[in-house]
Length: 532
Image 1 (cartoon, rainbow, N blue to C red):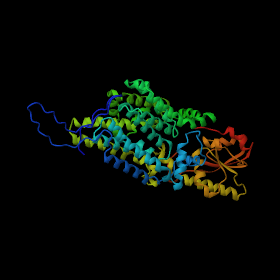
Image 2: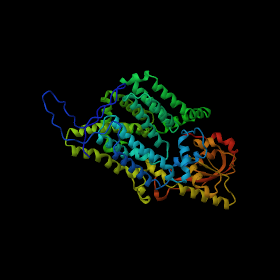
Image 3: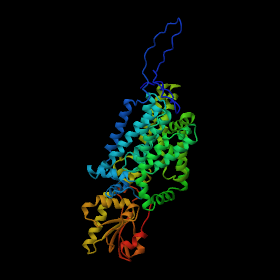
């Protein structure tokens, strides 16, 4: 694809959109001088146009995500959300209601990884298209818009999040949509875009409270830049009010349940604040776009900073990166909603760099960088490696791919112990697990095994409570340490390991049995809660 001149820089707040100009401008005629027509060149796309190739890239992205969605199996959070969808509420201990609601809706297609991953795949495809739209707002030409879409589609963090039915996939889309409308409002003087931004933020807050972090970052970016004047108008505040109104049901649920999200935030900080995490937090956040794309990320941040109208975005991005690195360095992907904005700005910088040198070589380099980067990392973020070779994938135990493996086998192992105890005349009256993923697996995948009630003290399973379950004989999964103080006898029955020696957080789970409770579940329940 040939390189065309960019469509022109965006106007400042309060100005008018730049008019679409041809790639080759004709000099005005002067008195007595005849103008010689110049040969036509490829026109620059209009200010809001997304090239057809961008849609192709997005379609391929979605197709690949769905093609591999059924390999390996569920992530523990997906199993948990399926069960949460069976207990619909305006809130949960560890997330707002949207993700469980969507698993309830997609459940009409059956209980399968593919069903819960349809929405995330489509959300990822939308992010790819919106990255090109952002590049257009920043003044990119056709090549820059396609490059923004390509780098976003190949960014490991986008590929990983769009593969899983978790809150972060929709959170990424919510951040990009909010940023798109705010940028449009500022650059195109679109007052009502603030309302659209508020609506997107409100819906996003019903999926993940991290959208609040984005809103705080944007407010700080506007206050600390020349765009602070927009905050003296009513529209940003009307948008914020709309977001608050949409978010209100979840806030009310949190208030009436003792603000468990605050306890979760504290627990996450303690679990994700190791010294090594602090040292690597910033580099990892930058590298999530792809190792070879790091120069483009840096160029994008520099471009945002050097463009007065866009400097508020640079400030927002840097503040969010620093906050995550300082408070939650083990959750580096929490700031990645700004990634498509930075990549779109980097695409503008790349176009200008290409125009100053050997175009074919430079164009080839910037196109190859994201493709090579995703090729290097794809085995750790998508289920493409045959299961028998997973144990040879470097670093697999620290990524989510490993945790999508072995849940049916765990369910069968627990069911086998339940049946063995029943044959011995000591049929379990309930099952208690240490992790919501284990409980979710037994609830979702063990329906045909006639298991006793499945309980857990973690997160919303504790809120759901023990019901009328008995604790006379409790089959225990990964929770003997929790129950030993409250039972006369606890012993290990077997140890579960995922098949094919796949390393994960669920390797070496002890399955045991506890009898002789000191009290019934209602009395023991307050001592078994843990939010993490």
